[in-house]
Amino acid sequence: MILEPFQYFSPLSLDEAFEILTEHHGEAKIIAGGQSLIPLMKMGVEMPCIVDIKKIHELKTIELSNDGSGKVSSVRVGALATYNEIERSVPVRRNIPLLAKTASGIGHPLVRNRGTIGGSLSHCDPAADLCATALALDAQICITGPGMKTRVLSARDFFKGPLETDLHNDEILTSVFFPVSNMKMGYDVQKLTLGHGDFPVFIVSVSLHYDGVKFTNAAIALGGVGETAVRASECESLMRGKESITGEDIREVSRLITDRYDPPVSAELSPDYTREMLSVYTGKALRNAVQMVTG
Amino acid sequence: MEAQTFELKFKLNGKEVNALVDTRETLLDVIRDTFGLTGAKKGCDEAACGACSVLFNGHAVCSCTMLAAEAHGGSIVTVEGLSVNGEPASLQKAFMESDALQCGFCTSGQIIAAASLLDNADRELDDNEIREGMSGNVCRCGAYNKILHAVSETSRKRKAK
Ligand SMILES: Cc1cc2nc3c(=O)[nH]c(=O)nc-3n(C[C@H](O)[C@H](O)[C@H](O)COP(=O)(O)OP(=O)(O)OC[C@H]3O[C@@H](n4cnc5c(N)ncnc54)[C@H](O)[C@@H]3O)c2cc1C
Ligand code: FES
Ligand code: FES
Image (cartoon, rainbow over all chains, first blue to last red; front, side):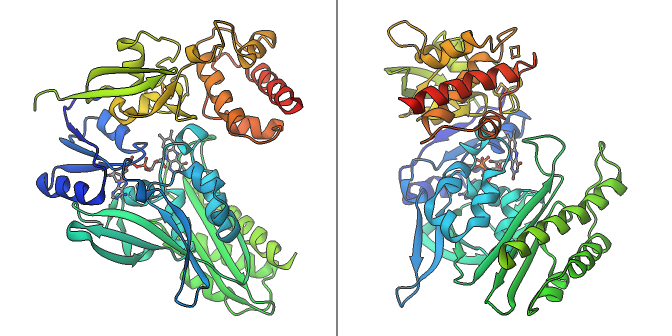
C-alpha cells in the first residue's frame, strides 16, 4: 500500500513534461514502467509529484538510425521501450542481438511487459542487466532538458554510483543509441541469481567483434561487483587484437577478474562461492561468445 | 499533503468505465474494491507472485505494481472478462480438464499469464517456452505440471485451427 499522497501528472508531450518538472522542481519524480519506483513508494519514500511519461509517444520508438552517408550506424531505442518490446524488436534482434538476449532474461515476463530501458538505466542499480549490457555495447545515452536542450553521453559517463546517474531532476532520458557493427559478432550474458526472476547477484555481459582475421573489439562488462556496472578494461586488452582466443586465455581472464573484482556479499551465499561463480560465469560467457565467432 | 484524486477512465473487460480514485490506489485495489472484480488476487503486493495478473493492452502485467491512474485510456481484461457468452473460454476449460489447480488462489493469474503468452505467440509453444513465459506466476500448491499441460494443450489446439 502506498501511504504518502502525491499529485499525478500525465503530460502528452516533452514540452508539457518539462513545464511540470520545472514547476515542481526538486519534488517531481518521473515514472516509466514503475517496476522499481512503485516498490519504493510502497516502502514509504516520499514522492509528492509523479510525472508519468508514458503518454509521450515519441519516446516509444525503436528504429535504425543512419550516419550521414545513409549507412545504418546505430539502433535508437526510445526510453519507453519495454524489455518485452526490445526482445521482440526485429532491428534489435538483427543488429544488437546481445541487447535482445539481455532484455529477454530480466526478471520474469510480467516485469518485462512493464519495465523500460530508460527506467532501468536511470535507476542505475549496480547489478541491473541492462546497465551491464549498455556498457558492453558502448551505448550512448540521449538526455533532454527544459528548452529541449539535448546532450548525449556514453553509458560509462552516465552511471555515477549506486542509484545515481548524471541526470538532473528536470531532465528526461529520451533514447539510447547502440552502435551497429558490420563485423562478425560473438556475445553472451550470464548471471547469478538466487532464484528464477530474481535480481542478479552479479552479471557478466560480453561482446566480441571479429573482422575475419582478428578480434577487433572485446568488451566485458560486469554488474554487481562495484558501485556501478564496470568495464573490465585490463582484461579486454588481453584479448583485443588477437587472432584467436584460446581456452587458456579465457582461464586467465576469468582468474584476473576474480582477483580484481569483489562480488557482493549476501546473506545467502558464501563469499567463496560467489567469487568462484564469478570466474565460472565469466568463462562461460567468453567461451560462448568466442564460439559464435569461430564456430 | 492531502489525498489527491484522479478522474480515471478505462476499458474494463470491454466496457468503458470511470471512477474517481485516490492517486495512491493501485490498479489491483481499484479492480477489486471499486469494481468488485475479485478474480485478480493480492498475494505479495510486490510483483513477485503473479496472483494479481491482468491483461493491460493485451499483455499480462502485475496490477499490484501499477498505479490505477496509469491505466487511464487503456484496456484492462481480468479473468472475469475471458469468458465467451457466459461460457468459460477454451483456455479456462483446459485448466478445469487438466485439473490445473488445488486451492485456486493463483489460478486467475495463471490463466491471464497464459492468455497473454498464447495471444502474443504466432506458433505452437514448446514446454520450455511455456515454463519461461509463465515464470512470474507462482503456485504455492505446486500444480505446475498440470498448469503446463493445460497451457500446452491449448497452444496445440490453437495451432491446429
Ligand atoms: C519482481 C521484479 C524483478 C526484477 N528483476 C530484475 C532483474 O532481474 N534485472 C533487472 O535489471 N531489473 C529487475 N527488476 C527491476 C526492473 O528492471 C525495473 O523495471 C527497472 O529497474 C526500472 O525500470 P522502470 O521502467 O520500471 O522504471 P521506474 O520504476 O518507473 O523508474 C525507475 C527510476 O528511473 C527514473 N526514470 C524512469 N524513466 C526515466 C526517464 N526516461 N528519464 C529519467 N528518469 C527516468 C524514475 O524517476 C525512477 O527514479 C525487477 C523488478 C521487479 C519488480
Ligand atoms: S500480488 Fe502482484 S505479483 Fe503478487
Ligand atoms: S493452486 Fe494453490 S497456489 Fe496454485
